Image (cartoon, rainbow, N blue to C red; front, side, top):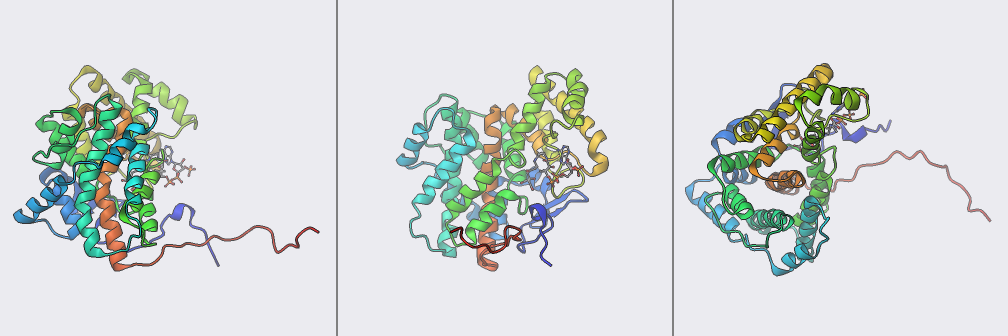
Length: 372
Ligand code: SDX
């Protein structure tokens, strides 16, 4: 008997050796390593390499990986022209989606080839860093640049955005890039897998993923959660706001709930740590206090249903404290996720290559004659 699984809940479409999630116990590991330990002790480059190639790089491999990323920080002129030509009101993530699609148009009659694709990955990582940095620069009224290589991906990115940066921001950006790098197969990675399963190219798969990430039920929550804090305005308003907006059923609490987790999202531990470290101004401390009180109200109301805080609830506080506006939060999430998506699509095409093509249960009209 055919059965629908709404939202593909509990439907498994691939084997993976990349990310393990235990939703009941709030456990998340990349290739067996605990996510918070990686965020604390490793680096975006080392963890990207681990996810893509199955092992940490040795010194020479790390140097070569970083160098090949740094060789791809300059965007081609046509992408710079597209960046300049998009309407001012274009949102950051929509611009990233457009630039990825433009790069896909260069792929022409793409033919899947593992070796060629693996070689292209550092180009993509370098290009996307420059895309996101220049999206931020343009939207903050600055000129487009070719980023100068720093000591790390995080430093290169922050310096390209702000001109200068500091150790705390670099470490928290590096940790955020690791924490958001992968999460098994959420809607955005699934969109990439569907595209890659047709043997389409990697840029097209990434564009599909970013299109799915935009929605407020998924990556858009990183911005939506923070907008709640701004709307509430002060810690004293939290309970009234929660009663009028959430308990009334008018809105969903953004940054809460998850398809897999029935407890706290394990990534929160590190995001909360950096939210504390980076929230230094009175305004930032006020937002953090609102978040804490709203989280408490949310857990009191929904914890018994297995609905807890997810990573998007605090990530915006960290990104804002680094100097980014709300409109950039989901785009920063997207920048982080590129490595994880590329790891999943290469793993899929390499080991389980099969066109992803589900069915629909027909319940429309039976056979009819054309009206004479
Ligand atoms: C991310 O999948 C991933 O891994 C994603 C992600 C990643 O790293 O890629 O982790 C990143 O996208 C995190 C999620 C960010 N989204 C939000 O914060 C948006 C708010 N959350 C929800 O809309 C919801 O929790 C989802 C979409 C995340 C998950 O929804 P499901 O699994 O489809 O659950 P559902 O919508 O069927 O809700 C089940 C019940 C309902 O109550 P009942 O009708 O059964 O009484 O839980 C309730 C819902 O009303 N519920 C909420 C709620 N989330 C679920 N009630 C109030 N507030 C919420 N946030």
